[in-house]
Length: 347
Image (cartoon, rainbow, N blue to C red; front, side, top):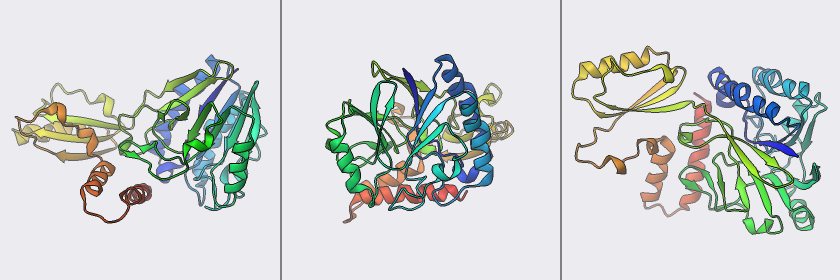
């Protein structure tokens, strides 16, 4: 039996941005649903953070999710196993009140897991593990220790895995807790990583600028062979352009339409030609542009220079690492990342 695994969809992200929802929809229409149909998949596992806001739901975001995702899955006869994540639990200390249970009750094909639950996917026994908090901490640990399943799927915060590019979590649960499982799949961290047994599968699409360069998409799991196939999302929201006296006449701007663009200016010998380049780019219906003027010296080894690393989070993380802070730098970076995400929601 083959099942699709998707996680951290964050419907309603970026203050229910139409731009981002249009971008999401291309993935679902062109990649996700055609893949389900091609492989005749009738089971989807959603490993948490289905909706973006923990405190409320924008009606337009809910309508979008129902019209473009849940209605279609219901029409296709697909069963959805949905795990409660930290973004869908209303309170931080309990999963009892959660968005997916409240908002999706009309869908008989959607099963919501707000507490650890043993279930079957075909002949595969699976322990579904929702977000671990103060209320369910002890019962979750007991469920993990007593489980006869060899596969766990959850929304876990484990240390030693990258939460996003350039930042490895130094806090969280120890992965040794899951030593009895041969396969552990998790959501929560948006970048893909694995230690061979525990795998973070990553979210389906770019949401923040520091997502540039990370492969996104979803996965297909063969529950008999445990073979995991990555289905990548070919669409991006963020693009980086290196300007090095690039002639505007021959520069093709079509791929940047509707995108958020970072323009890295390496060399600008003729300001008028540069202005024409920028004007052409702005006239190509891009959504937003940020200009970073580096003016890297011509003797610099460009192989050692990575303009994509110059996103806000990377700059702040490097500053914290290089500082003389007497505080726990990992905690400070984690706090900065959370504040950055909240700030993005205000844009």
